[in-house]
Amino acid sequence: MVGIRFDKMKAMFFDRKAVVGAMDRATRKVLSKFGAFVRKTARHSIRKRKSVSRPGNPPSSHVGLLKRLIFFGFDTTRKSVVIGPTPLRGTPVAPPLLEYGGRARRKDRKGKGVTAKYRPRPFMGPAFQKEKSKLPALWAGSVRKQ
Image (cartoon, rainbow, N blue to C red; front, side):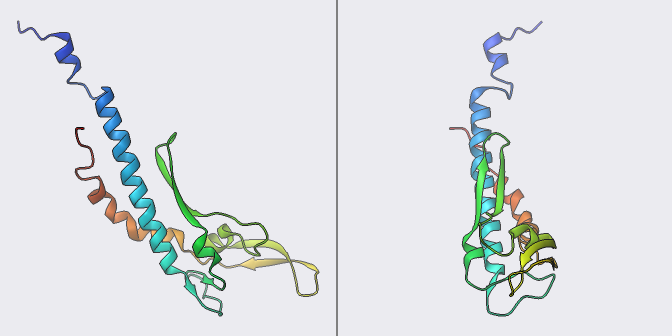
């Protein structure tokens, strides 16, 4: 019978504080980098121009506000990254309407309330799809002993 001391046996399991801590740090670092990549790609897909973009293409930015409102943040409780535009009061079109399309109430030129139909102009989904292939390389060698 081979004898192994309890403290040596305990050191072989992955639930140790050092391993869990290293995983948490690596997760935060990798997902934050990924969030930055997706944000940059989404921002670059939005062109500043006066004309309206075609449905199915990223939206046009007439003032530059949409580009500046795209953020990312690491959610520590869910260990995930949230990437996307933040809604701004007073803007005529909310970011989800741009991404997915839909209907919204707004005022026409005469001040009368009308329902407007918006066709999708996705920019976050395509940016995520484009950058998703970088994730395995970001994870490679990310967990290291401190």
